[in-house]
Amino acid sequence: MAARSGGQRTEERRDGDGAHDESLLTVALAFAANLGIAVAKVVAALITGSASMAAEAAHSIADTFNEVLLLVGLRRSGRPADRRHPLGYGKERYIWTLLVAVAIFGMGALFSYYQGIETLTGHRAAGESGPIVGYAVLAVAFVLEAVSWQQAVRQVRAAAREEDLPLRDYIRRTDEPTSISVLLEDSAALVGLLIAFGGLGLHQLTGSAAWDGVGSLLIGVLLTAVALVLGRINLNLLIGSQADPRIVADVRARLGRADEVEWVVYIVTVTFGADRVLVCARLDFRDSLTAAEVERACVRMAHELRGAHEEIDEVFLEPVPRDDPELRERVIARYGRTLRPRDSGA
View 1: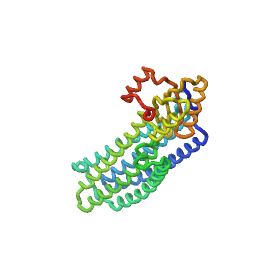
View 2: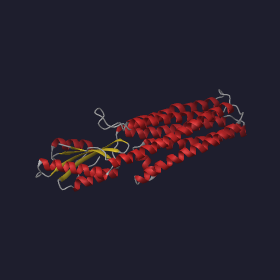
View 3: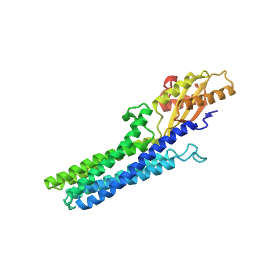
View 4: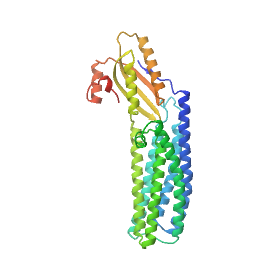
């Protein structure tokens, strides 16, 4: 016997729509900035013959393509649940964001490595014509990227404040990778522009194309690092991670305080989309309760959990005897020991 939540409340939907619109604005602004920057960098790379500029052009082209992927992910993951997908399409966003990480490495990092190696080995002729054009493009690109970066930072900081988390902890724990992707992309873009400026400037000052090649390689390393971080974040979300530990602790405490519950056997929480959490709990109810009383208690507790945490979308509560040998073996297999009520969480 289990109790299941009915769905998200109207207020939660409005909050979710607001966050969704904010993500759309962040991605759309990044797309517009990257598209203009990519065109300018391609022209500057052709004029200057700079490997660093060519690497930055590939970087911006990859970022522009990535914003399209993020927009597709936002659109598709927002579809409502249906019979074939009863928990909705929230996790599809993680697939598209994972593709962003692949694109950053494949389209940006590998091309940057290629340009750098070609320049350092002398297989690519590095021209020095039109350096002023290169500097001008880099300066304009820096301003445009800074505008996009500020929007991403504003959204991420606001989300971190809402979750009452330091920025670093929010980035590590978040189940909404879209704004994090834009923030990391724009941060890498700003650093990459400084590297390209240094490579172009040292090439002009020393006359050695090696500096330009080194700049291209450094941009490749930077993009590889961003791709790895994004890949790791989305891999964890796709595998299925538990909810915020604070939510888990509060759920456990609320269930344990219920008059009808003698023992919280264990709790499992799973994130299955941005700000969407599934809660499954096995509870040992007082033996004196009737079946109808257990049903009413399950419905009431599920309602209380959803009211306390808007992230909780689905709740399943299962009455079980805590001394059941099969259940005990399963708990030991998962946790390595039997659990006390206060530490029975997942």
